[in-house]
Image (cartoon, rainbow, N blue to C red; front, side):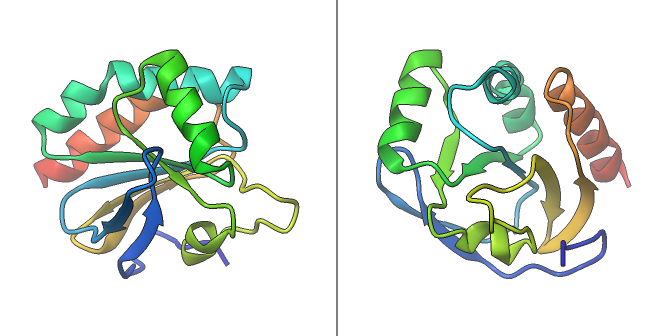
Length: 147
């Protein structure tokens, strides 16, 4: 069952596009967005828009992670092709998606985004439309952090 606003989340580890094992602790504001496949039209739109807004996320102390069931090599190629400057996590086993309560029985997670702060889910976006999503998430995160 998908995690909801107010649910606590524990740390999780996965490899990024460089093959480095990263542990997400969720102490800082963290955006974790799940997407189906590297280098497909919607996923590329979503990733490049998060990348364009990355400095704004960093200015407020937020971390951004994209997650799909694609491999480390696929992520590296995707990052290199579009000059993505944030971490993409390889979740070939579905462990990260399952940690967030997402189903990967068809080999990929549904396009879903979580805003997490201080180990608690602050917002969940289901059935995400890629174009403009990063701006919507950034706006919501700014409102959350103002409280």
